[in-house]
Length: 164
Image (tube, rainbow, N blue to C red; front, side):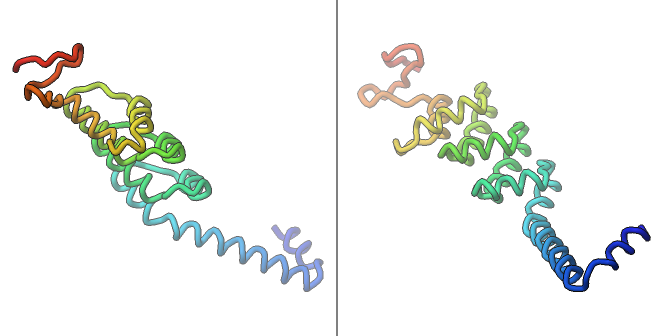
């Protein structure tokens, strides 16, 4: 340690000022990053949906709304679903609605329907621009739509209405 300080003392005064300035700017950047993500990180930590600072920084660098992704992950984890930050951010970047996907997974789980995250994402992207959501698709499979002619629910295997 003494040798390092002795070497630093031998550097000209202007270089020392520049070195201290660069070190100060780096410390300021680290401080701003820590403060910027601290509330989101604490919220995720206390809810049991842990995220790392590197994941938060990666989300920000990819222009993904950090708060939305973390809140959606918290909702999923609290409902017993294991969804990663990478899964959510990938679907968001593909143009999907991550909140609707997680809500549809929760609805499917409550209804006893086995729906995988990838399948829900595919349905979400397929219904994009149609005015329908993946959540509506799950609710329709739980409570089938009624035929406009007879008022009877349609079966999944045929187009003929069935009596209930």
